[in-house]
Amino acid sequence: MVDLIDRLGRIAVIVQRGRWLWIALALAAAVLTAASVVENPWLAGDRWLMPGIVALCWPLTLLSFGRLFDSVPPAATDGMTWRGRLSRRLHRGVLWLLGLAMIGLTLAVLLLTWQLLRVWFMS
Image (cartoon, rainbow, N blue to C red; front, side, top):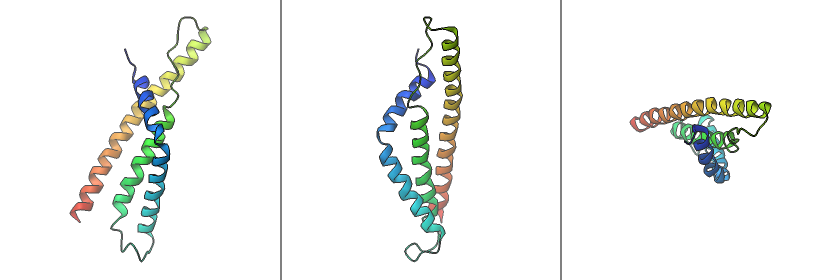
């Protein structure tokens, strides 16, 4: 049976391959968001603020996800000492809770994206 954190670890390895792309996208989105907030002659008003926020949230979410689950320890085995098994189980337990939190965060970013882009298209 594949555990939640093992599956998240495999996905994180794939996400980590594109980390330089995510960093570049996050920097570009941060510049776009900052340029939309300050008085800027190239970007009149705050027209690009909501897409900039959305474009900033996704790379940051992917970067944090990839970094958090890139090194998931294997499950404890019977050949380990009791302290080793306890340590491994605690580490995996905390990662399991963080995995649930990351899934919740991803759903929240998805909802935020939906709401911001819906408002942006309506205006």
